[in-house]
Image 1 (cartoon, rainbow, N blue to C red):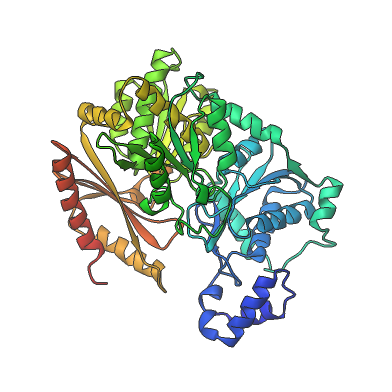
Image 2: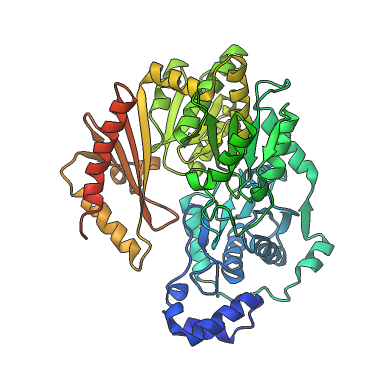
Length: 547
């Protein structure tokens, strides 16, 4: 711990009273201060993410201001930035601090006057022709986290090279740096240096989402929806009702914005715990489907009714292959399939999607983990005046996008398409589970599992590095993406084990954990699960061996 930093913070006139209280506690109890001042928050996947609190290694108004000064220096005066924020604790405060810094640096700011989904921020950057964008969110992390993500002029998360440049400036900027003669937020708002984004932008966004649908008629699907106390309620319900859905039940306890996430401490729609109340309401209302969106509404989780009458939570891979098959099917049926169509997926996403793409003669492009790489591919197509070729992009972590109006995963778009797809198959007398089984029967019985192996302790970075080194020293053949040239170079290992399946190993970009993506095929689902179990045991034997 840097004692000089603690002294500096204790002597500063901290604007946030919560930070003053926390610093006082730290001074009295030194055991609580080490991690808060152990280094600085650094730009990871598109920006900052960390635990809320006082210190250089925490999310607070000063780390936000420091990052924003660096961004302002990077893009320069006379430019413009759009800002959005979700329902997390202090998200609105951080957004206003960022807006104030930018405006005092001579940069025009457009900011939402209410919580807004991350994909809506991506849309606003393009709609307002901004040079950059910021969204205050920690995605699906627990409630004691918040974050700060940066977008480029194309509405895509900044790439690692740009993040490094901003980080370099940030590290040279004093934590308590302020612009000369700094004006307050309300004064800058009155002068027009800061301007609120009005409802016309939201309406244009919903229209763009709606344009991705295939059926504008009245729907008969019974839906349960939960925004998990996040930012999705307004946009998801508008998109659904505008497109003919009327039987929508909202989970009451998770309807309103609440950054404490009292009913789902880990608000990730991939997790069973986050879906429990939605499943409860699905059973009570005898609904066909449950849709859940995470706090910043870029991920969508899906649960469906089974033939036995119970509820099944679909994986991100399963929803992805269902959507891919549906989009291709409907585009062909409606003569909307472009020449030389393109689908983009991440390298850790199921290869079953390749078989579907092959059937419909769709080119499959693979990118590194992170939806910004899918957004970049849309940008590349746009530069070649070929963006109409893009029909879908997805990643296994419940991220989907079927249009080019934004450059990030979009749970509003996904919610509409999943519900439309379920309604379409319901009209044919089959469920989404039935359709998924048809896909498995046609393309092969496949199971996927995600292993999250956490190392939330001091020195976790070194432990993770040691384990990745152990994998590289193993006798099992693998592909090392660190040896790749160009866009696919990354700290990722792919084990393709005969008769068992594929295991892709990578460190998380946002949390102290190693992620392993398991995928196995079999003669039937029992066989596939057996192979998957053996694969998991093999990989975990390496991963969990004594350090």
